[in-house]
Image (cartoon, rainbow, N blue to C red; front, side):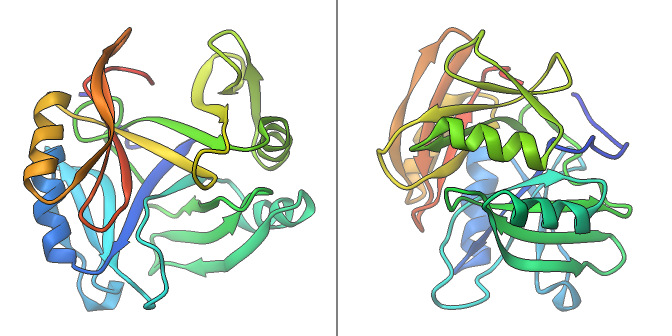
Length: 249
């Protein structure tokens, strides 16, 4: 199982988390669908919960902070200088939703929106790196930005993060350096602009069935693709999450 203990390079998706109306029910749902175990971080950490696979950090769950807060997975990008990254967001048409916040001696975070209104997190590790498991069951395996204007997205993300692009695999795949595949970009006006995050599972067909049994719904039915089975489900609160038993990363 690929695991990581070193700091993620700047511009790399390094974490994802979700705020939900019912943390206990979310633990039951995602534990069954993804195979996660959980560790509550306590009231000092806002009742945040770390999801783990085989003892390795994978993602976070927490309670809603306000009644109007949406229930959706948010993707975080590693940065080396959170202050400079926040300024780069402002300089390139983005907005700051939550300015730099120190998280109890484990790192600094911010929440921003890109130039098409998609919320993302920034994470400056000190020392918590974010996800320790990746590209294996329980871990983040792929990220797809879906926006009306791919060219505008490319301009934003290459200005804020040290990313390049290739069209070798389709309309746009983000790269860190010349070969490290980071994410895909696709153009669509179907639904709101968003990052679709995909989690690796042992058996995508089985996980889809479990999601439906636990109050979820199917957005994109799991089907066999070139790399394995892939699909998208919604949890009981309407949050989209991709599942796959494919190695896309």
